[in-house]
Length: 76
Image (cartoon, rainbow, N blue to C red):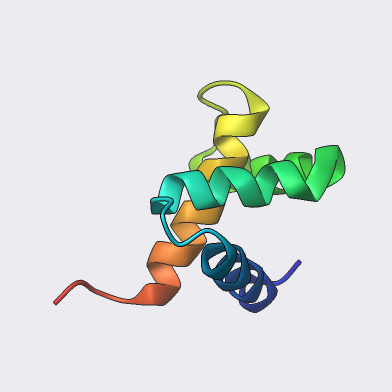
């Protein structure tokens, strides 16, 4: 999944769940993606950090948040 596809999927998930914070939306997106997607996202975290600092699920959520916040741009 490309970063752009991830952003679109994140945005759609956020539209469906406007009361959730960013981390909860990312967790929901990872859960919906299933095991293969979770491992894919966690592998991106492993590649960028050089280590996996915990379980696969939190690492996958971390990747989603990193992509979203990076493409979102700097805070005003």
